[in-house]
Length: 390
Image (tube, rainbow, N blue to C red; front, side, top):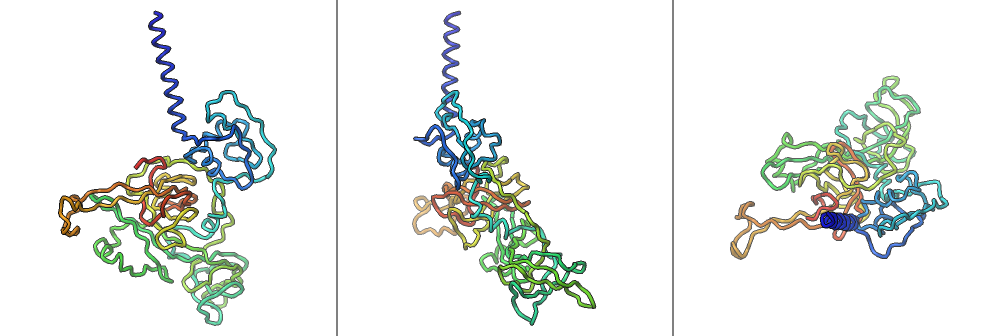
């Protein structure tokens, strides 16, 4: 009986030690952390978690160990956070600190994303929206303080405000069964919102016409706002819009949507994806204000959204797709790689580039902020679970 009890105790101790070691390894604790940390103005959730954890998207582990913070989603400057649990110190207690500010800290600096929250949106269609057909004095462009004439606002009343938006990009998805990855396109749109001819994608569009592509959405850019001063009266077939906000120049073809005072969230909490997407389905569609690549604090458009279970705060790791190359040792140095079938090439591994956090989601497209990177993030890169090893 004593021998059996001894074996049981040894087993229990081994399991306990293994559990503690596993949890500590899972947390990825950074060294030389203090026992407590006082939240400062200008801190972000990502920065604080990244300072003490190697994986900032595990920030709830810190807040859950601090019961003195009543709402773990609302951390304020002056709050004192206990970090003793990182070393498995039991019974550590911390009293709430004097809060220095009425506003809670954010997951990321709002200044990095607010222009994109305010000025970008993705819609499934826009042809039905009212549009600008002309400007006063037959101008080609109109700015703040000038008048634009709008068709499609038959019921508009003086005093109503509208945001002027411009369709700029069409995002599409093409499923390729049997091949490595699907194709994702971003097509530029002309002043009418029609797709412009892209010679780089010409043969793809010929081989796979529009009927085989899934529309992910149209990107609309805010260019200004205005107030209706006169509706369609006295036989006039347009409404008059007085532009009263500085922004881009308004042109013929720009669309109008009602002003939305607060159309976006201001609080984001980093977390890993709640739903695993198939390889190749989550890709970088575009890099905002860049041609094909960007780095930390740049905004990217990605090919997944609410339909795939993505929500604000979702963290992805970014990966350059491994190339399929011809084995020149096996095939010979003079062999043309174009003569080797895809299945006879050697697939190289994907290469890690960085992490990005989603801050705005639509049905099939989302926007994310690149949080950290070791190489530029480019159009076409894959998005995976933040802990993906390869």
